[in-house]
Image (cartoon, rainbow, N blue to C red; front, side, top):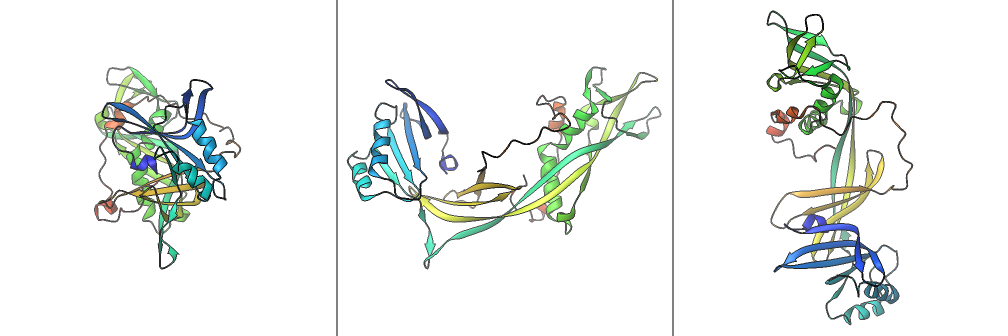
Length: 324
């Protein structure tokens, strides 16, 4: 929630180490840093997640911990509130320490909740077709071979076709287009495959004909592969924390338990959402049979492609959360 509300020049760090000149580095749950009138200001937050009110002992422990840390203000957050003695102890710090408890927003005695639906897609390119300029100038369809080499106009080797197809398929606009297209299909829950075609003639990528050692411009790149669609309902309970309104809830997302946070800035209608998986101790995924796509970008000119807006978005049907 603090990250959502952070203004320009403000950084919010989770589990940050601050220096204690006596004990060395100490871990702080959340650190908010900013410049105020040229001075570096540090707001430290310590969080009590227990199901019972924070005790005076816990409060004193946190206050003592931050005595020698570069903390300008200490904010203590407790899910279940604070004991009376704990609040009295906070009051003795004359505003340098603040105690906060999430307050559920209610109407007619009932919590206010917001429901939304989050789409998620998962796709994997498995084969492709190249449309190239043939010897007579006509466009010829060539089945793609993963190990086929791709060249620039001067004959410099750029990389294998498999990398070109993957980088093209995983362009952010491509994923968004596939997500919107899937969302509006009545059979979306049964989708098993995808197919797309990209016009890349202006990028100067070529295929070499081995027999003649000639380069042929790739005009279009057709990609097909496996595809799945899922939609998860997210229920956000509205609450306030330190005067800031937010929504929070736990739900499943792509098969994993996650916590969601949503905020809407005052005076706007745009809501920002973020999520984090809570199964941090889950076993790691199995090692894939095929090596993952390298982090290095082999075909950077793909990012210069322009993509039209999906018709459903242009018609005003694109208010659903962006697919992941």
